[in-house]
Amino acid sequence: MKLYLVQHGLAVPAEKDPERSLSEEGKADVRRMAAHLKAKKIKADFIWHSGKRRAVQTAEIMGSYITHLTVEERDDVNPADPVAPFPDRIQELNRDLMLIGHLPFLQRLASLLLAGSDSLELISFTYSGVMCLEYTEKWEIAWFLTPDLI
Image (cartoon, rainbow, N blue to C red; front, side, top):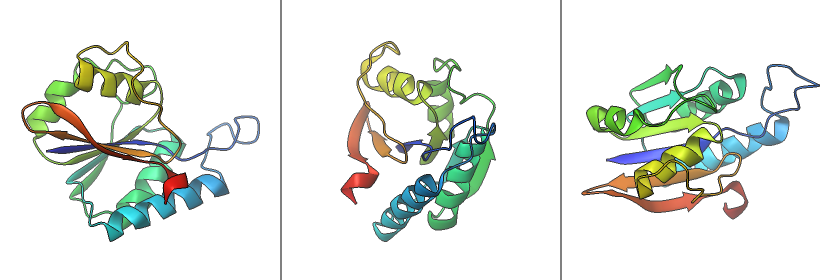
C-alpha cells in the first residue's frame, strides 16, 4: 500500500484572493509534477483533499493526470486537524491513497506514521512536493520529489 502526501501548490496571498487560489506558478508546478508522476505510471486508487481552494485545485489537476478511482473532499485534513485517527483510516482503506493537504497536518501525519509521534518535524514539505510512503510491515519513505527536481 502506498500513501502519497502532497502539499498543495503555491497560492496567491490572502490580500489578493481571500480564498487563496493557486497562483500561476503554483498551477504550473502542480501540472509539471502531475505530468511527471503520470510518465512514471504513478497511480492512486483514491485522492483525498481538503475543501480549501488551493487543495481543491491541486486535486483537480492531479486527478486529471493520475489514474484514480475517486476524488473526495474531506473535512478532516485541514491544517490544524488532528492526525491521530488517520493511521487507522488509511489502514482500513488498504488501497493506494493520494492525500493533498496543508502544513502542519502533512508534517504531523508523516511524523506519526514514520516515528510514532506527531510532534517531530522529520520532513520539510514544499509546495507541489510529493512524498511517497509505502507500507509493508511498517511505514517507510519510498521517495520524495519536489518541483525543482523535475
